[in-house]
Image (tube, rainbow, N blue to C red; front, top):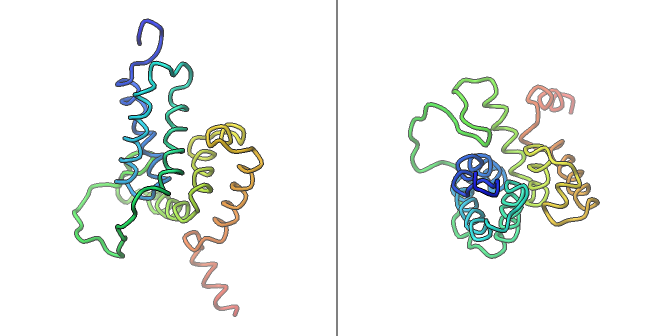
Length: 183
């Protein structure tokens, strides 16, 4: 801690960097873009670090979210994803926004399926879902972070939940098979 009781920037990055990266992965749907987004947000925060007096994590998270929402309009997206990775290396586990998970863990498939469903949401809806559930923010805090009205946050939240309810990623195979037989 500094003499005025604030955390030095380097300590903040070490303490909160993984959580910011997790947020960015949930928003970007791509770990490499998420890394770039976190770097951009931390660079902006570093420039203003001496003026940040309260809640530095919330301040940096707001920068991250605004960079995500505005950056999508100005960045080039000339890369096109393919169905299969060009090369795959064996790994011992999966790293997700909440940290590493062991292979074969019963939670891995569920987490990946849910992450795919959230990634399919439009950017603002995805941002609202990430803030409300990953960061456990209230509607008012989410609105303040995104610079939106509470009503707009509620609308995005409602639409996101409606989309998740019918998401092809979250369809239970047993229920789908029963519905096909009923037709």
